Amino acid sequence: MFIVAARYLFLCDEDFTILENQAFVFEDKILELGELDNLKKKYPKAKIIKTPKNSVILPAFINPHTHLEFSANSTTLHFGEFLIWLKSVINSRSILNAQAKEELILQSIKKMQKSGIGTIGEISSFGSDLDPCLKASHKGMRIVFFNEILGTNENQVEDKKQEFLKRFENSLKFKNDFFIPAISIHSPYSTHPSLAYFALDLAKKQNLLASTHFLESKAENIWLRESKGGFKKWLENFTLHPKPLYTPKDFVKLFKGVRTLFTHCVYLKEYEWLDKNLHSITHCAFSNRLLSQKSLDLKTALKSGLNIHLGTDGLSSNISLSLLDEMRANLLIHKNFDLLELASKLLQMVTLYPARALNLNLGELKKGKIADFSVFELGECDKKQAPLQFILNAKEVDKLFIKGKECKF
Image 1 (cartoon, rainbow, N blue to C red):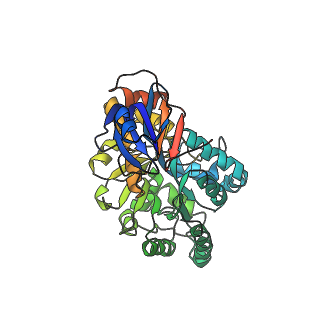
Image 2 (cartoon, rainbow, N blue to C red):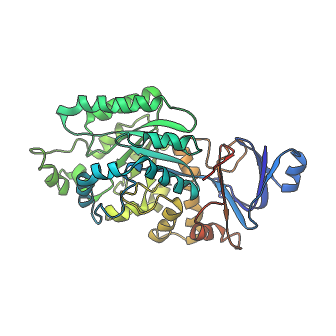
Image 3 (cartoon, helix red, strand yellow):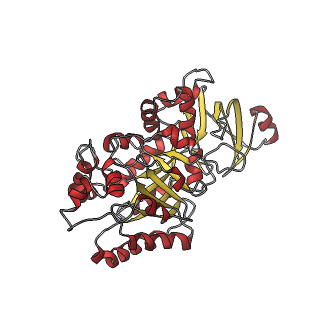
């Protein structure tokens, strides 16, 4: 049993409550919050965790969308427009995947932990990230492992099913509290309906999470809605008279009854298509700036009542997997918010909201929640300014606890 105290506790609850000079007691879960002296008297055998003088404690961040198989990218892939990027991915993915050795992936995960991330949603396209993710899960990183399925060639559907099933069933062998197998349908432009139905049937039968990329780019939006544009011209290189596999609405219908994270949704206006109880949107602002020629209308998306949370995407379309960097990008991109209001909202979008999306008992400093939290040192600052100053200045944790145990880097 332990007690930890800080200058500021960011509870990251729905009201974004900040407690000043308070503490909490924890084991694997948070047992009680209150005044430090009172808690010491009530729990005399609890060990006191030392924290810096001007410290902030908040829930460990949750990054629900990463692509660790692209950890080797820095300057290889091309940015500025989605199809330009996609072509560079196809040309370079085998090389980048080969370069993303286990050691490099583990380094990427360690960097995320140092930035305060305790849980990730890893999108696994090839399965080459399985072993490093398992090793990281043994050292405190909680990983939701989204086995991805994709392919449009009808003649290859059965082979694709078997290849996916082999990866998926292999991941299921390792299921525990820190390694959670899940399903990813790559996108409506890249996944044959037979493959999507096959994978989502597994998700429904086994009550698994799902993830998908949706309406990320102008090219995808025009292709799905109007059957024309750059995607049509590109696909004509591979097939005669290509047609979209779905309309946007029909694609969303596939996920009825499945807890799903829809990533990007930059060109989605029909938020009513999504189920507020099961569906959420992962917003990757930095990635969208590089590829999408547009950013999510965050204010409208939040007003829809849907769960909107942040993710970094992979190093295939970002320069960092830190949610601190991602929040800083959001501060600059979303100019129609009051800055202090946005700072508090962004902190909820990397804690409370992704925890709900992933159906995990995390994301808040609250009695009964799993004790996933980080300790950061912050300079002297006003309580009202603290969330903004934290986002602007925080770089690495002083300490990170996952399920009540301190992570060692």
